[in-house]
Image (tube, rainbow, N blue to C red; front, side, top):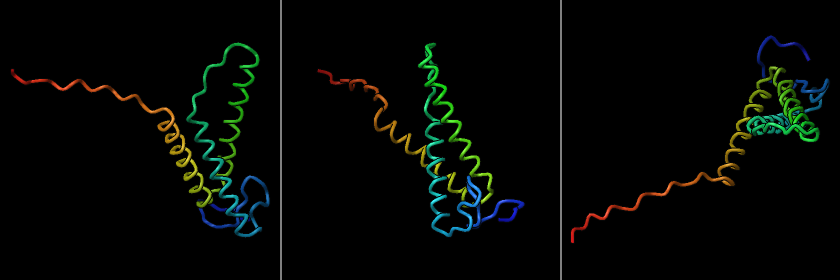
Length: 128
């Protein structure tokens, strides 16, 4: 795989590991694109979930630190995929981020609907 000076499109790209999927055919390239899409979807979902402040007990602090470490790791993996400057990988990462955003918003609006304000009773203007 040669160096490219800017954005390019092709299947001869190394994503995350040297030699993969480069040189293994289209199936491995599309599997790598699916992996990038899933990683970016999880990165967006984890970026939108709130990080609550931990209680000052060791178990809670360790869980909080582990979740933060996992979120950062997923984000770095997406970053490593995108810096290949391959347009297919970049577009796949963007599609994954959009899919993660839409999926989490649909989940939130379905499971936690916004309360509906009660309408005032209609005015009774009848003169009797």
